[in-house]
Length: 387
Image (cartoon, rainbow, N blue to C red; front, side, top):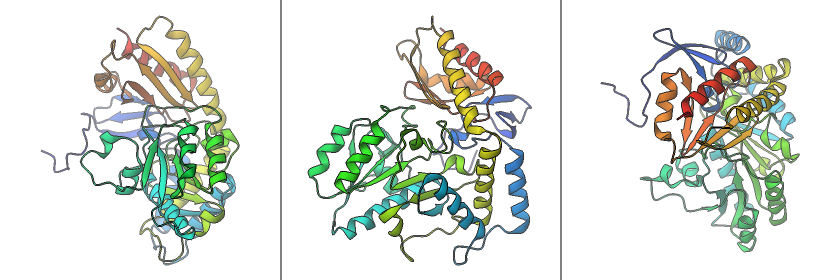
């Protein structure tokens, strides 16, 4: 009997090593990882450059705390801000914490406008984390169940509906809009091409902060280093995590303009955030993006998956929709034909790792995946959904 709390339902498999897109269990069986630890191990398991960075830094220094300057942290802040056209960075340990920082910045921004009851608009079916603030920001009642009273300063509107946001222009308590460029936990929901541009314009017109949660969609997942770069825009606040450390826990809240000036000494902090190890690894992650043409591979493999998958499902009645942006993939299924609740276990038995969200298969394969591995993935998916 395990002494772990029962907040997870782990499948009956334990992995002991990984290489690239593949994981090996305790019995020596190999599995194709089409989930990347839910979008974390973007560069694949045991990437040599990342492993080298971890080993080398661990031999030098792991932790000093933010009472002192940290060279790797300053280097990473400079590099990320340069890449994202932002001004300043705060480092945390997770995506939820990065989003928490964004929410605190929005609260402080509200005080500069003499707003005592600030409201942040977020989207229905969104997911921003499991802390009390990010749970309240999340637009999914099933995630919030049992944790009321929630923070009341979040209003949820329909995703990909700028008219729903525009209606709040008369509400003087609104201070920010916080959305995901692509809703990951909802099943890879992709908005209209100009949705983010319109939200950005509404925020500018109303003097609201525009906050983008790219915890899952960022770090190359959609084919750009940051998902909003498809729209040629820059948010006021950008939240990153997951793939930033390729498995090492790190989150980042980047801000620009007035949003970058809100946090002052004593207003926010993190014991482990931005330590020498994690920031050194994140710098190595960025180096790999530069040296191995990762983004180019994402776009090539995305196009290859889409063309091959569509060609092979012509006679497959169980597939209703393919939603794909880069290597962020959602396959909508007909619940009347397939029992989606059994697919994760069924895939595991075929040595494939996937995720099910509602009536959709969610795939987040490593960004280094090859055509040969895409072929294996499609073959296994078709086997999984065949009736």
